[in-house]
Length: 313
Image (cartoon, rainbow, N blue to C red; front, top):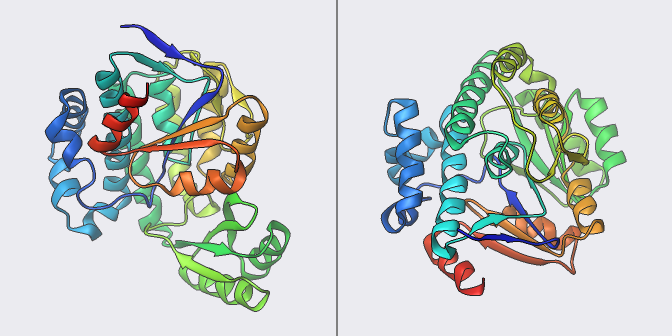
């Protein structure tokens, strides 16, 4: 199988809150390569997560222990369907993912096999669900105020900045009471909107601490390979080029802010002119348009978009 590579395109993968009932169904029905990924995840879990993905109910799919492997399944299934449709190994110049999406990059960059990536995501989702149950919380997107103002709001409310998605879209998190207080303060200081996210915990915050030691143990027990292409880290917004760097990044990522704005900015400044979002939804594509408006952006999350991508190769 020939390799398609370029100094100009990057793969990016979505994170939690991108889930939707029905996602992945047409990939399962139309692509052998995609179906293999879905079946592998069902086997690893020992249950039919695909039934929850395809049929719902939505509140069950949203649970962290289900949403994380489900989103990863769609992302990796779409990627393998792209390779099947193009009859090429698709090797980008760089790859990254938003929070959970960073784990899909592990498989694409050759750090882990698909099986090991899925096993790791399953453990991450289980541990984070435990943290959610131990320290309940939520997240919200704050639109229209800058990072400094958001920091002041979070400091006053006892909340956290969890994601800097763009200069004007920042995700905050915290316990339900403190998050509500932070939303009120942000609105009073000029935020245009505050949008609750479809997650059941305060990710990338101190409330994830109950999951940290368990995740560290899982990561330390696994053998990582050096990435075939650089993975742009969520925490550093810099290239990760060794197995040790990747492992350290994933440990830090759990309770640290996702520097998405800086990550896309770095890629655009270092030769990436085309971003391919692979997985459910098109949330990242909208962010990239605001961060790097001159870049070409393609979204691949269902079989029709896989076919469209293959036709353009």
